[in-house]
Every structure is written in C-alpha cells, then in structure tokens.
Length: 89
Image (spheres, rainbow, N blue to C red):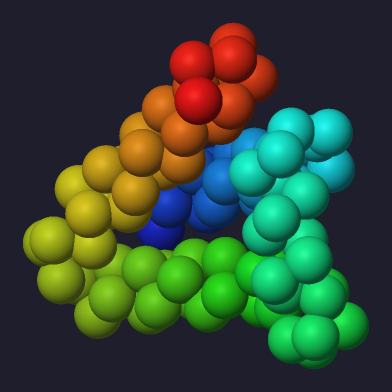
C-alpha cells in the first residue's frame, strides 16, 4: 500500500515541479538558468525521478521510514509551490 501512496505522491510532485519550473516567477527563471547546462535543462526532473525511485525502492524493501519521509517531501514541495504561486516569495 505504501508503494501505491508514494507513486501517487510522485505524480503530484512531478506536476508541482513542472508547474513551478514553467512559471514566470523570478525564482523559476533563475532555476531554469542555473539548470540549463545540466542535462539540457531536464536535470531537475532527473533529480525528482531519482528521489521517487529511491522512495519506491525503500518502500519495496519495507523500510518503515520511506512513506513518512516522502509524504514530508511532498508536503514541502506543495508548500513551496503555494508560496511561489501566491506571491509569498
């Protein structure tokens, strides 16, 4: 069950990541400029994928910390996206 929940959170993380990276916010422009040389700008997506893959692997090995850690990570991503889109930063 934890693998399925982590997978759903991963889908949400990718959606949040894409929305923030495509936003016209100064922080998003700065991140795009900084990551443009790393894997032709897709390096941040690769990092997001590696984090998801790690969480899924740990959940498959039945490490109890995998689900809470990834839920916290997803919550922090959602909070950061909310702060960017609401103009708090």
